[in-house]
Image 1 (spheres, rainbow, N blue to C red):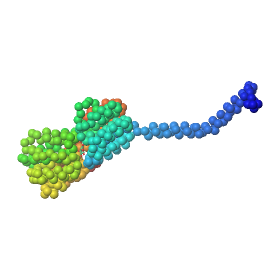
Image 2 (image 1 turned 60 degrees about the horizontal axis):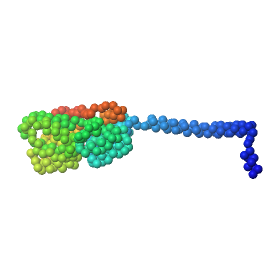
Image 3 (image 1 turned 60 degrees about the vertical axis):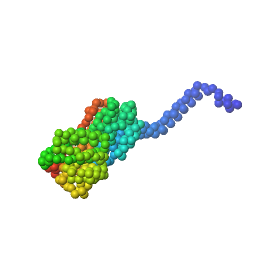
Image 4 (image 1 turned 90 degrees about the horizontal axis):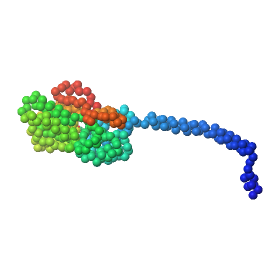
Length: 350
Ligand code: AHR
């Protein structure tokens, strides 16, 4: 009890002041001891934050690619990756392996991840409204790369960056008319191996080609057959066409190089010389097809460039900044054919 009483007994003012002084000097001493540690913590934290800011990509872009069906597609993916690195864009790239449902799922993941901009190459034109409405409601702008969509709804996408497929078809048809003239042909029987049904290049290349030859009475399209842009399907289609029409075929119009390269061995196995017995017209302009054009086994290749990456990055930055963009962006394309000195065609890069 006595001890308790002493402990609780009030101190005089000198004692209180002394105690206060002792506490202050202990606090100052403690602070001095841990100061270097505190400085280190602040310094490291600050540096990390600065580093985070420096390394932070300026834009997060989700891109759903169709697949890897052709040299064109592989070149397109590579170009987009290269340009993303150049433009300091962090790219979430998903390969849909030729399936629309995979593309839809990828777009939903991009929305959940809150990317700045979504881009995708729609495998076919229909069936995108729901997922694009979700992107719109999330406030994420969408860029169509390479191919277009078909929709009744307004404002689902900001723009399309890709080839003018209709013009490619027209250029193929115009070449054929010139070639038929130069060979004085009075009958031109055509078989067409088309790309993926209901895809923009399939629809537009066909429309452009048909429009271009429409006024020429020598031209007859014997059959159009779906080759799905694949080399293996190109071979299958050509086999079936040769069985059905044999030497009745004057022209093969194929919607891409891959299918053309699949068709050529079939033509040769059937005993015909592609480029001489049959006029071969292809689209894309990849290195392999250009090499075959130089050999004379293909007559004409209409260019379709896969190099869309730079436009994509620039457009994505503009959209992120809230700036306006052109609704349709087409690259310049040309025709390579036996009408020119093919040895002068520079390396294609895809
Ligand atoms: O959409 C472009 C087309 O798709 C190319 O012509 C073809 O090669 C690719 O697979």
